[in-house]
Image 1 (tube, one colour):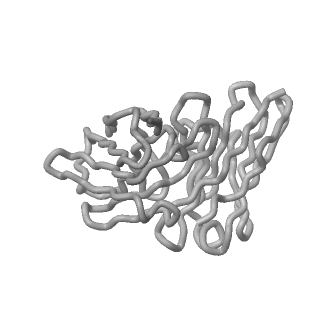
Image 2: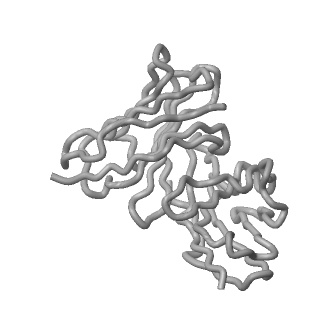
Length: 110
Length: 116
């Protein structure tokens, strides 16, 4: 299975909005709504930010939202804050009963 | 609250077998959930290695399937990873994790370096 495709980096200024895309195939993102997004700060374990495309776990700011169209999922962060600077990974369940991650996107808050 | 505590060597020689164990507390390992291993090479992205469910059903990343074994010891409430014939490319931080369709609990992570 191939990793989901994410842009290597995105950037934005405080207060702005950014969107990170995550492209898969009909066998993963296009097949299920089991898409999740994780935030990872250096040296830390990933933290779940969104699941089932656009649902937020308890405690996650509503500045984080998600959507999906066909084989591509997206994470949008509005009102960028310095603390949002991190690596972001998408993940999807696949039709082979396995899980696959994206290659990761480094978010820089300018 | 579920907690995962990893153990195992941080240095493995090339061609040998990497072995890690994850002790589960606060939850019975056979009560459901997938118990998984995920790794991250230095400076690179996350890679799902595989998972086990209810002690008998295993699921592996096709790219690693020939070298990976994940097993459960229900009497100890722990699960293990074995990765055979390791090379330098297997150097990574390895995490154990609990998930259904999302990972909700992570171990502390173990940096495993493959070097002679």
